[in-house]
Amino acid sequence: MKIRLNNPTLLDDLIDFLRRAECLAEQAGTDTIDVEVSSPFIGEAARVELGFYLGVWCSIHPGVQVERVS
Image 1 (cartoon, rainbow, N blue to C red):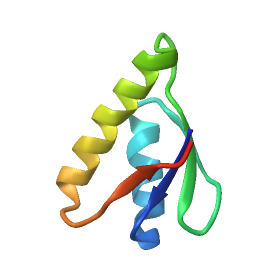
Image 2 (cartoon, rainbow, N blue to C red):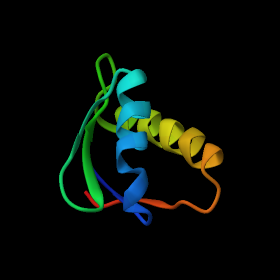
Image 3 (cartoon, rainbow, N blue to C red):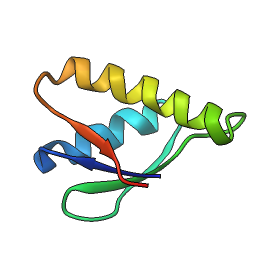
């Protein structure tokens, strides 16, 4: 799944956060990352889990917005 950030200076921080949550995360572009939620989550459960992680991260970084691109 591709995630776009409105503040690309925080890409590394988000990648580190997601990796600590045992997700596979890599920078894909200047303002995007590719993310895969680790097993046992698949399909919709993985999207919900990722949404939870992104919500927590955004609450730590007020004003930062993330968008699921795909």
